Length: 570
Image (cartoon, rainbow, N blue to C red; front, side, top):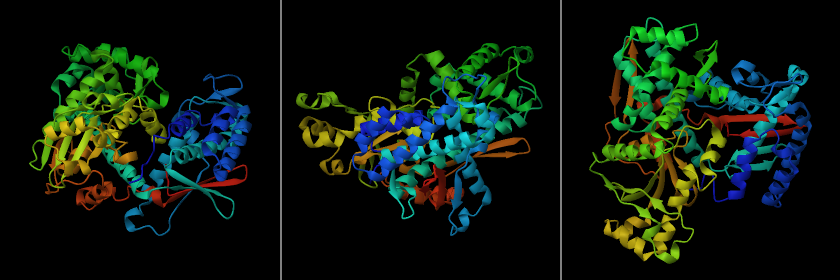
């Protein structure tokens, strides 16, 4: 299977990462252009497109300022919602006319287009725009058109998209490998469904209270607290207990913000503490929350500060809650707090899998010292454990990574996690990527695998997996047969497709657990098999339009040139 992103093309992935970090000025730098020309050699279509973007950005720069300050001339754009920058989006969107009934919900179309536009509009955050040009609207619109084009060019650079020129002279981007792209989209759909359900828990908890920081449903309250360990994919009492009070305080403050029209101030907190004297940490948590929220970008805040108090911010509530919990985790457990979570995640994973007779957990490691000395120089090799699926005679070599919350999205997130082979998921990929190569070379390594009952035949179909807790990077195919999986999808694919549905009715709450009644594994190196299993299940039919973006065409006009993205929808 082809890779969604080939991170072995280090210069290309670094260039893509840098242009996404600077979508409005990267192509106005001549040195950057020279590096791109060297990368693309004789790719005439791409070189013409580089010239187009470079000319556009050079003209726009006279109206832009990047010192992140308001001035008489420049208006600093701070927030999509406050500044209404999505109104400047001028990307034409059309949907295929021959869609099946499952795609015909107008609200689904509108929601996708709105999400695409809001995400694009974030490209203007922290940019100063000439006030006269801003009032006319043409400059911010052209900036967003250029940013949209830069993201697609970056996807082309890392090998996800193709780029051609049509007969009428338009530049056309298309997905290179539909199956690989669809798997990524389905993983995103699973994550989105999880976030929607979690936000419903928080909203219903707030509605259960009469006013202020109160609630009348303890079961729903504890369900809200469990959202953190659900995201971290752990059931470790030790880890959660270390920041339990801070998480509980954050949820109570969030309830108060959702319930009231006035900011939650220090006075509000003190009054709440008088009503509940046992809550001794609420005031210190409040001050720490205020400090942390001021330090992060406005669009990523769970809370905004108003009149020295807290009001609801613009970020998805669950994402904001997770980010705040990670701040408390680092503050309480130290800089290496995530390594402690990896141990808890491993215990959680083993406890889930060991219940099933068709799954063997092989808890031993493969590291650099397990190969001969002559192979060790500059060798990145680290496998945490192996999983045997006896139904399919498959062995999975697993590297487990706990990933902290990241404020980026889309390709920017992928490259932040993958572009550097020494950091984050990129490190995990490089650690398992060499395993199959070393098995062919190293007698010492083969003997170690044999000593742990892995046969020669099983080694032929060994699949390396980087396992993590980042739901938006699920079921992603990398180079050399390496796959990225979110922990819940990994477990469900190997066992049964269980689900938890939160039921709310007239203030009452219950969690309904269900499976499809089939305990059987699916092959992790065949994501399409997993997708088909899910969407054929009545409980997940609402996800059948997960790949709606394959039916979408987006188009911009820059300097009289038309650029189209067909079936991309990112």
